[in-house]
Image (cartoon, rainbow, N blue to C red; front, side, top):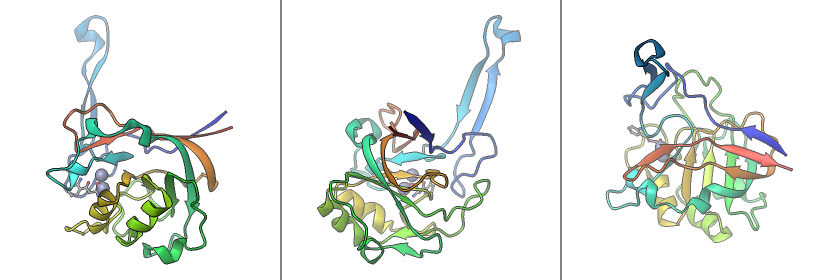
Length: 207
Ligand SMILES: Nc1ccccc1C(=O)C[C@H](N)C(=O)O
Ligand SMILES: [Zn+2]
Ligand SMILES: [Zn+2]
């Protein structure tokens, strides 16, 4: 079986959401001090790199990470190719796309070209797409950009619309090298009891 790692590398200096906590890893208790082992410490935002959003991220009454159904994050997924110049993803862009029997869809835009800097402009999801996808049976959408809404959005209409339609969100995947088609997705959040989001190790498998 082939495994494709579609996760962003977690490394000091990696891009994070403007104003959010910088990612930091350090060996805080080195072998020379502990006498036996190196022990690291992490400082990071829950929205670092490839991650899932819990509804609590944008809704005070929404579910926390630990309340999410893990079945969402393991199972068949379809990777769909979209043009990188795309302004937004709407029903129009998907009308030719076959989503029958698909529960997890990953949009490959390749719009985030330089992974060492945070993108200024990204294609976003049109809120009207959420009920359309829900009707098709979609429960999870993943993207290769850091948000389903425009970076400067405060109302987050796509986050809310997806949530209202029972669709969960996986952000900042790396899909450049992935051939569109069907895979098994595994992208489990950490058991963060109160979490509003969680980094994931996202992989695709194919037989
Ligand atoms: N970390 C942030 C800090 C401030 C404002 C937004 C964010 C976000 O993370 C939004 C993005 N749509 C996200 O879910 O990752
Ligand atoms: Zn997020
Ligand atoms: Zn988000």
